[in-house]
Length: 411
Image (cartoon, rainbow, N blue to C red; front, side, top):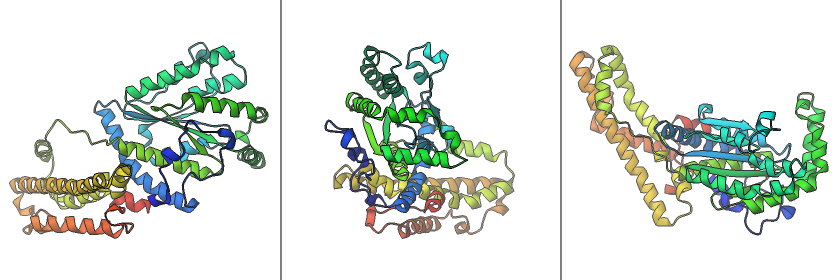
């Protein structure tokens, strides 16, 4: 499905020195050649990757890591900001998400520096933060509605750039998205809110005031892009007349960003063999025998679902590099498989020995019945790889290998 992109959307939709909002096509597809059903399938596939990628990020935060991700979503009413929160963040575990929507400042917030409330809402290490509107309201709404003088809001651009640089330097990946809907498409969406009894609560009479200031907002957004799209925190402008496309783009950005962070599972300070032995002392022989019989299937299923052996993840990680780098990435997949399988063999051997010590009559006479024999383990590994290849996209080693529970659910 990745070949539906003619180019990396992170480059196609990035604000450059020649970007012109006035001529920007808000109904375009930014290099995506598929249709809505293709986008939905790709989002589901990316969701299977995101589940583990986010868990790795969260685990690293729990282990003392400092990295996190901050997604900033800006756009006028009806642009689809709420859909990003529901459809993209809905792909990951909510305990690892810090979602915040910024409306009109409260009296307490107005008594502080405009960044005060933003800093309080920043994601913690290991989290993915999503800001539905952000500090950019203080150079957009504050400007158009004349809440502060020009000499005040005009100085905020440099201040924002310096602050965002400090966030990036401390381990935050900032993804900034501006959802740009066309004037007439916004009118149609507002009309739908008026037409539907279940959506009228979302309509505000102030929406017409915003439309009356359309040109002023477009000018303000143009200055935001021109003055705050930096190398460390660039702006990406998304054509928002098609809601599913915006959701696809943010999903793709987040997936590729987390993959390129190359997050590894934290290494425990304890030894699994020692802890396994202590745990067995609290188990009945029957429970240990059941655990032994389930070990091989459980571990191999987890291996096949892991991004360690996912060819789509390897392709996304190395798509910007040469063939040599890609070959090395795919070779690393086999090395990861070997690690998993060797670790599994060690685990099975220890569990058999532990069971032998307490209840030899429960140890299978034929090691192949619990997968602990070298022959059985080798056969199991080959079967797992065959299952993965059977689901590949037909591109050879650069196809997608999606064995395991999570990937099956996404197909």
